[in-house]
Length: 396
Image (cartoon, rainbow, N blue to C red):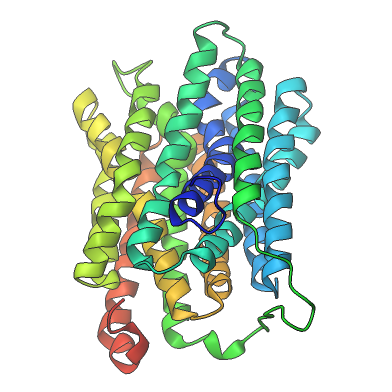
């Protein structure tokens, strides 16, 4: 059953494993390993630059995905993306050259976009005879698994070795195994050139609703990336919490696994815009907790709220955008992910500047919370002024 390319369970498993490779190995493993790398190789400023470079690659991949016309081209670039995720992680295991690291994180970001944006569109296209909103919630639970699996691999390596490069090697090896299954399942039978469905660049999809949705997702990109880059170090920097940052990050992954399914079910029962606003409001609380408390339980709650919202928000925005686009889900998925990517590029840079100015994370967290709040207001505007004029959104 799990080797049947047309079986929904196999399709969802392949999609989840692709997210583990593209988002876990190529992106979130960096967060897990950041405290260890800060001790022996990286400065906090260079870590911020690497995070931004990674998201420049992610942004470029998101924009590129908009112009991929037919399904076989999507499969090809999806496979190239998974290969880049593995190769770039392998490079970090064998070199400490800053230039190579910059290039590695750039191409890892591009690969992650192929795995997430293009891979998710392939999954949505392949799923058969099922409620796609609920099914995509299961697929996007892979974002939580990506954090959990990459963190557990890192922890397993650190029980035998304190060398963070060994962890990158183990992550790359795991990535190869997962990527092989995903590339096998997420493919389509070859068709003659006259039968291949090609999607053209459709300007008509740029409705006011899509533009506001992209702006709101930009603010969520900002909200997501600050803690996605610095959370372990934020917690470690609080009085009495040195060494607890890894546990907060583990809480993020654990909370993220069921969050997509829960949020997508809520969106199916109510509507996506309202549920997005609730999730973003909870994320604001998560962002602000470290600014007013050094209590370990409250900061673990911050990790739970953050993991339980940012991963759910990715699935909510991607599913909402994909369904707005109809038969070409990768188009709007790519557009809004590009906006998300801009937020991810900008946020680490202003964080580094504010950390240097104030010698703590508080100012960066205040600004981030304010930006996410602006996103909530944008969604409120979309609901009150744009959705009522769009019949396609009545059940989204």
